[in-house]
Image (tube, rainbow, N blue to C red; front, side):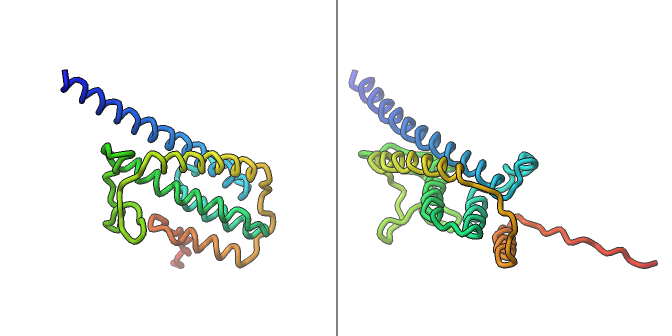
Length: 190
């Protein structure tokens, strides 16, 4: 009887973890959808976005959105983009790791590309996240969804980009290790 009760308690704890994870991933999916709406609209790519929008990672889209809005004289998006970066890091940690029940939360079995645990708390890397923190992220996600919805309503395409802006976009694109520049070949004379 005790074994059955202990198993039910453990199953309930995992159910709670899955509920929190599911809610977080659902909200982040909405945030990512808004990023995927804003990016092609800002760069006037709506007619061809379906060809490549899934090939550009979210962080690169965020950097390009930030650059585009800065080019248009808007700086209000910086806080929004910074918050999406934080949630993106947590989304990656959740999506690419297993989790374990912990007192008042869960631990994520995740190591970054730098060989460290996924988050730095006061100089110490830790994989624990409490349910109360996830509740705070949930509230932050809701506010970000509203902010991105409002931002989307104000987007107009960049009409005449400056040289500095074009250079910044080139720098953002070139920063990716998966970008191979197409260099046109010149025909050889015979």
